[in-house]
Length: 553
Picture 1 (tube, rainbow, N blue to C red):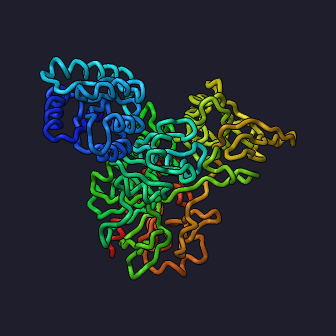
Picture 2 (cartoon, rainbow, N blue to C red):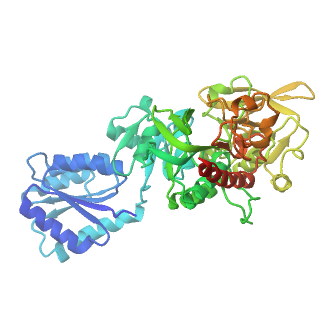
Picture 3 (cartoon, rainbow, N blue to C red):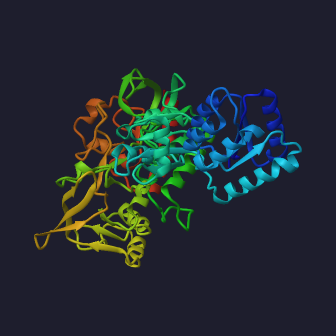
């Protein structure tokens, strides 16, 4: 935790040096001592300290200063740090002004010059003020702070990005958080320009795009080398496993992710059937361990960065990025996974990011406190989200078109849901309409059997309705099945066009696409098992096949 600050201001250099010397002798272990001869300079630095999340415990100011009187300085400082103690240093002739200031600007104390010896005439008074300040002091959050509207899609996107990348932040709802409004007023930021992101180095971004936020937290979106042995597109479980094995086996490995490591698994509040973790672990924790392991082996990780196309030149693969840059690689592993399908119901698109979320919006769990929360979908991801949100919501309702969860969810999750009082499974039910003003407020639910509609209050709607492979970006002539999943290995032989594309004497490797040296692993691959463990296995296997491909080339 940062030390609180004692801030001294006096235009007389000799007096200021004496003040600082005495303050440091008594308080340097518990407080940082800052000092300046200029009241205007002090006020400017206070704005910067506020943006950094620093705490000021006490101001000690001389009364007679050319730029402004000490009382005026303390009044202006109070607007920035209202909780700090204010002490005036004054000559005997100015005691009347000091006494008036007690009432006018809530001056906490005044001290007469000279204050020698400090053990008798300085420290006892300051000790009392500092003890009183400490009794009510609550440390500021030491990290990134986001000020915005709770139901703003842009605010949600930034929060979701930071939490997905395991970067701590403090959320300040402008409608309920006084400290957030203080930051806006101090920096002259209009509410229409939110969200605003404040970093602990004092810098700030107003209504930023994700690449700007990523750059400010030290993430890298530009490749550092001209050529890679293998480029892995997507940092879900398969991509992370590929990164770990590629790095550990000496391949020059690049891992590219457009949002955050972990993919859909990374948003899971608890994965309980992953080998080696009998008590389960969160998707975020699994992702953190994996990306730490991969980077320890020397891989390069680009995020947020998106591949929009792959071009071929001889045996080399040229990855075109969304920002116009290109990456060259000898081989590619596609592990882009799947997206949740859009819910085709009236009004849903209007509230996406403002009460309607695709996947487990763990970042908004606190906003669901004491609310009625609805989840569409009957798979494991939906069940895990229901269990997590039941800790916050008044009630959680799982909406499914089937009569129960038995055909789509693991039994261990069904048992947990049945044992949780505030989770309710509504069979034969679908969302017909979403209603609200600036955010989701109500849902119209349709009973499929009875053909009846009813309107319910809704604080949030989370959607988990099936897997759509993330392959639309692929312009390269790579064979996919009817649903868009990438075909690999022996599965390619059933396609009439395969022999027209494949010109090598050997058959494709097990996870190789119809384009030699381009592999697919995990949920994006046709025939995948859609389990974290199998995706990890395929990611590791893909690297073995990459070795074989590189050896023949």
